[in-house]
Length: 267
Image (cartoon, rainbow, N blue to C red; front, top):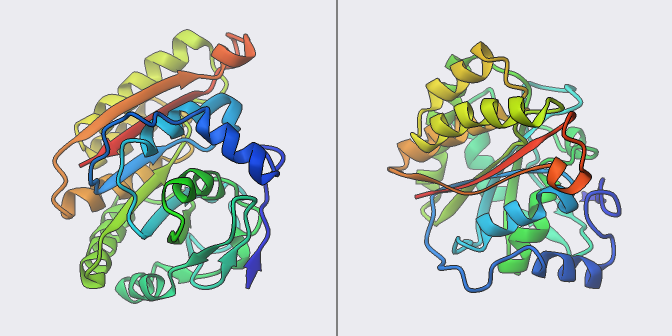
């Protein structure tokens, strides 16, 4: 199966040279790279969030294998959908799904369900790939997208995902993708985002999950982030560093309908 890009020419350039130039305008080549367990990165148009993504991935030694936890924005298919085989055709070049790692994940918990088709129009995972492939030309990955889930399901999925990664016996980076508060005033957006950022920085998966719901934070990827944090902690991560935060009004000038973007490196 070959998947065509869903948002090339919309969220990022559909021309390979223009895309590379855009990425090089977002990254920090002099940043110190480190081995990381995980990362959190946004998935909006690069004009809004590209520099946040760039600062995150500039600081990580990207391994060959990456698991990307995204959002099922269309709310279709299964609660948890794993693309388990094939190639994603991108302007930056094709990227293969790591079928061996995908099968390990599918075996780990029956909540993980193989479904390539539901990924065809979803943008959250796709938006991460140009940055990852820029830093790792032999990249392979496993895309997983999530509907809204209970905390207990998040906890069980994280435990199973960590076991699958352990069984793989190679370095794997876990990337969760989310945008933060959506379409509120700048003041409200930054206030709500700070509440979520504090829980992520503390590697507090349950606290993040509960805070997002209690404070009605419209953070689309709260489930992927909850699972990523719990997975990384199970894999002995001890620190989540906020490396960048931005808001859409810095580009749009609209201070009443603002989206927040945060980037973390988890080690």
